[in-house]
Length: 132
Image (cartoon, rainbow, N blue to C red; front, top):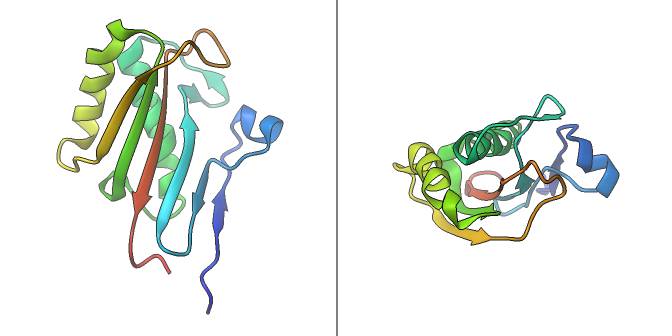
């Protein structure tokens, strides 16, 4: 059987509007998860940067779960934030979730997101070599 690219959709409001998948698993076992924000149940969940980071990573974990993967498979994270003052809170969320995993990580300050109430967006990449 030939391995195929598998795409995951979650019904998030912008997936259909902008034409993308939440996650894509490649035949080599690499999974790319699109930018995830603090959207819970189709609605933007408020809260500060820590809460938004936790919600955002949980959205990513939900996509990974559909591919029978979890946080332990994450090899890279990218955290986009709108204010330098949020570095410590977003970093605290990352440490709580990934301290034992220790993926490669970046935190980047950006000018904003599609909704101004969002202050954090995350991307994750995961890998499982037995995926094919």
